[in-house]
Image (tube, rainbow, N blue to C red; front, top):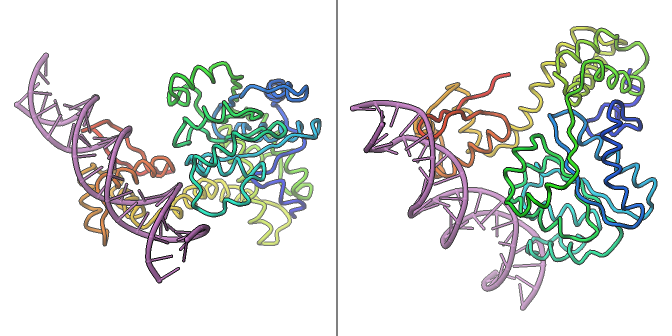
Length: 335
DNA sequence: CCTCCACTGGAAGATCGGGAAG
DNA sequence: CTTCCCGATCTTCCAGTGGAGG
């Protein structure tokens, strides 16, 4: 049934990326100076989720490594490593400078110092979901680090730049900005067909089933591949030799629930209480929410802390918080 | 229209937990 | 063992704000 499961993994980078030629060329050209021993400017990739930003960044770096022997690269997901410390640590990891800082008592400043003393070969760092970085000013330090080239990846161009201070904004203003549009249905079909060819035995998935997937995901290739993966796994478990329509349908809804579940699991007990209250009520006013939380929690945190929890829940897309000041309500998000 | 105050979110400092050093 | 130091978490304080309700 499944011939190569890796092809359906979210982090898989294909050998041939389809429908993104101009974006790849543009990104390659900004990195081109490195091949002549010169520094390269940062670039900024932006567009909706699942449009291939991360994929193209990693693909382009792999190609660069093939042409240029002496180059270091690293991928940092700023959603996971959102603090200054974690980001720097991850970046140092890419040049093996972390061997002796597995201890916790190394201050952030020292990590930065270490990085700025770096004088090895060119170092290209992908900062994925860079808009999630807690302290954007670290980008300025990275910008000034010699031999270091940043590839920034985010969803919303305007929103990201508005979060920067003016100094940083003007520096990054000149960076190559590459926009990624949503995939059309035809493009999605093409991507899925490619994956299917490598991942599963022929004739396991029909054309019209791929079409169903492509219709269901609104241009998001990551979700589309996730659905394909789930459907293939489900079919494999039941030892069927083909994926039927029902399996596809199940996988479509499963893929939507999946992200939510993993996010809910990451919550602490108190955060979970807040989340449950909102889910129960569907919609609730701030003061009422805190009262309910105080009741339920064995050792309630302060109001301010609960507000931090709420921003985190919004962040994970578990709830939404429309309205400002007095008009604010917290609402659970249904699929 | 205006006023009020519930609510937000930044800043600064305290506390927690855990690893390293003495 | 204790002491020191770090990031992460949490609290306390408060300025700013804009929608509700006159």
